[in-house]
Image (cartoon, rainbow, N blue to C red; front, side, top):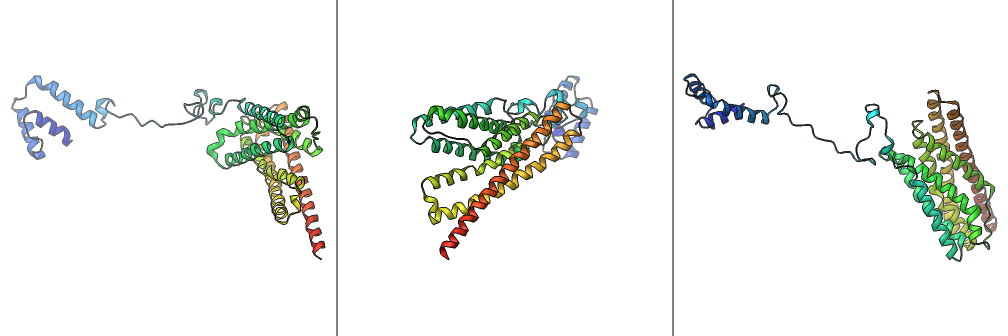
Length: 334
């Protein structure tokens, strides 16, 4: 190497910029004539060590090789994606996910906030429905992004837990707390509300249970929760009826277009998630799980189907109501 020869010649009094042939001649003649003392061995050793540090060499015992660059990984656990016991298998550690309980804590914060607001306001029904639609609309879009982006898969268990806890929170508040805080409201829960929420709660907790047991459950779970992006439309329709603005042309036109379209998409999307869940179930059952897990899995499939049927029932009622309004308007014009 030119650097090694140049350093050696320079150390012996030669000129590092001299031609290579001249450097070799000078160095060879000096060694052959015995002008290089034995004590200069340490100097050559230092030069050799310097050359080894400048280029990888097998004769240096690998000590001159630079270590490979470290890859920076950011995860919730802070140090990698695989456990030492599962290294090389691609299995995720539980530390790579948000710990269980955070979603339930947020649902409890939401419940306390709704109770306080309803205790202080003059219109508790509009207040707690507005809180729900804001929270669920945000949660629905976040779940939709998590479904579409593989890099957000670490959030699947947390989002499923949060959605399930919020469903339970809604049932407790609507069936018990709101009428105890404000007895004059007399809030009533409809049968379709009960069927949908019980099925959704069952589906959610089972999806959380199988999230680490049946690959593919997480995307389906957040995909179903993503249907909550339509939550604002029933609240808007209810308020338009209460304020009698639904009879206005612009309000009725906007709701008449958005409401049916949104719930048609909701029915389509939830049914698509159910079909995808059946495929995940076939792969999971093929692994021969225990009888208890098989029964729980089938229960989850039935609960998702119930949610899908609820969405189709609501879509049918919305389309039927919109068609009645259109026919009535046509009759008035005629």
